[in-house]
Image 1 (tube, rainbow, N blue to C red):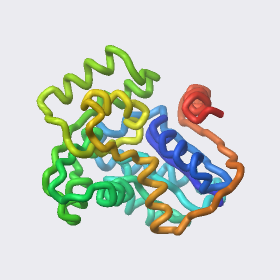
Image 2: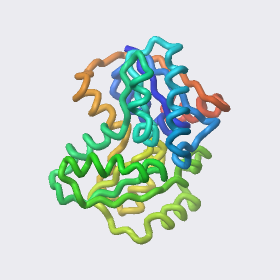
Image 3: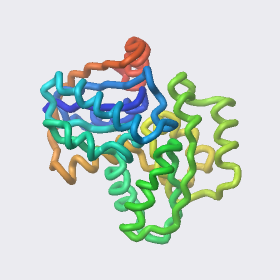
Image 4: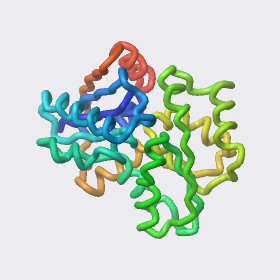
Length: 247
């Protein structure tokens, strides 16, 4: 069982961390398009073009499945990727919606959706959540979190200042969807801002749950080989992977 994981940068490592912890695959091939991150400020045609280039990259490996860890790509380019791939392709938006649905007991729950400008503009989460009966939804574009995480800043005054800028007018929600795979890297600080009273929906954990439901993946492989690739400065990506994944 060999899986590919694609992200615009290092954020998808949060998904890899969950896959590794649950021992679902024998091998993980990760590609981060670090030369062109962030995707969240780009137009749809550009996002689709970059996504299809990623498909061509993964065709060099005999993967069984590709996980699109980037919410922006999942919102805008998933169907085009599926049409051009000779392997199954799944995205994190649908997984996040499933996890939210299973985590909340009440349809009256107040949900805060965080994401890049492009993800929020797509209304992908809102449309799917409304189909499941959730209507108390607030979306907030928090794109500055992406370059902050790419710089390796996971806590401290700079991050706290940005959170105050984004969240100062919000009341504490019942749940927060971390609609960008970079955001779980700062989830402790986001949770702390809201006094640890909100349920956080993490893309990595959501994807594990989705894989269990859709593919009945319950394997417990004792070891997982991991290979990391980047379109720019792969050593920096590997260093973050070593720290975050404790390799």
